[in-house]
Length: 394
Ligand SMILES: Cc1ncc(COP(=O)(O)O)c(C=O)c1O
Image (cartoon, rainbow, N blue to C red; front, side, top):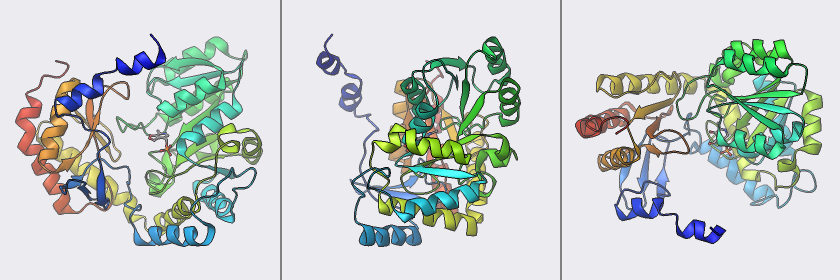
């Protein structure tokens, strides 16, 4: 089959559209973190945003972005390495390193690129990257790009990791790669056990804290939540979630960050984060330190929804983070459930393979009002019998 035939024979999205069930690439026309207006004018309660602290529309963040655009332009039009570096990037690195408690930081254009840069920059042929079975796509892509050997271990299973590491101990340079908070289940990695195993076998641990950074432990993230920041050599971050912007970072020791600064291809061969995105991330970092209530409120809001959804009979797993997955069954049941909820004015994310097994991914923010959450609960109540009648795995 030619590469073009592959496209013409791809019917999955067309079929969902024809059935009136397609839930992707929808246009939003104005939003705050608690609610959103769809392009067709519908107001929905937003239960599917990663804007965990509600900072993407905070007037101070928006103002910082606008000021930076006026001062430096709409884009840097080049890589940080050659001609796209601003004092803003350097300042953000200093403040990130200080806040997260690591010696140094490197700012990249997205979290995806931060993972590519860190993993493919540090690992190569002859090395082994150990990946959790549920690791984020960007971590998998990064490991593939590195051309290191990939070895999978069972999700959140430090014993399985140990068995596999023991087989190669001393024979190769090993990096262990996990998410701090898993984006689809909302569960945390078992960091204490992972750190012990990595130290025992001399493997370098990288924690992608896209969903924990800015959220857990007053924003200091998963490693700090477990009081293990000093024992996690590499942490990656994104600014596209709690920081309400776009961009990413790698945190680590000075020498490692300096090496990546001069060897990470996703940094050197891609334009730097825009002035406005960088300034927005910096402003968010400052706000979240001064307003720790945001981290506790997002946790309270998610706990409230977890309780309410469980009481309604939904299966929500056992996450303790702002991410609350709702079990639905198969692909079609998931699309149907998504459509029923949107009719009720509740926006969630329909997740289908290969992203994860079918489910609704719901997530909550610090700025949702009691009234908005109550509306979401009412929406879930109204459709409960129709969603829960769909047998799981049918
Ligand atoms: C766990 C994880 N890592 C990395 C990324 C990539 O972040 P970005 O949107 O900044 O590219 C995401 C975004 O979905 C993520 O969920």
